[in-house]
Length: 292
Image (tube, rainbow, N blue to C red):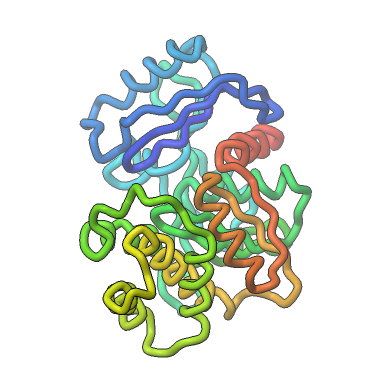
């Protein structure tokens, strides 16, 4: 089968067995923000050809392709959502393709405000399948960081944090020209500690990256790691309201971001397990197919 995680900037496609094993993969800079209306079928045919798959291969597309402004809008499911509810809301792909668009999920977060996910929901169900979990708190770091609560194999709530967006914006201001600096673990942990132990809030603490440079306490090449620690630390402070004592947290994401969140959580004595986003995505689609 073909699994496509179609994002805003890029898409990742996988040729998978029914059990979720990934045989081949490709990545294209063909996210929904650059794909013209009507071009989606051509790109899908290109992927099938590149991965050596036939047009009638079972196809599952998740992520932003199902958003408003994407290929076709797949309506959000309302929490709580079990995987069978997700399957019931699959949107068939147009002919000649044999497959479906996976819907996203919406919820009222713990602050009572609407929140949404697209693409992460299938990774969550993939993690449950892969790790044999029934209840979990799952962190999916990225441009938007998602924290998803699972109870009795149902997604019951989640919250989104714009940590990655803010970091990218800061790269164009106080972090300008520092984006290629190496990650420095101790400096990251220093930023993390400051986020937890000093006052003034995030906006004040971000400015201390500049003042510490002026005072000679922070080198230019350390600023990126320090600010990353500050941002992730403040994100973790907000998640304390729904983290349960002793609960293991599953991190699904890239190796780079997973490493940082693992460091931050282990600093707080939280048990962590990590899973690659590609494995989680394909495992989640396998969970859908197992319901057939």
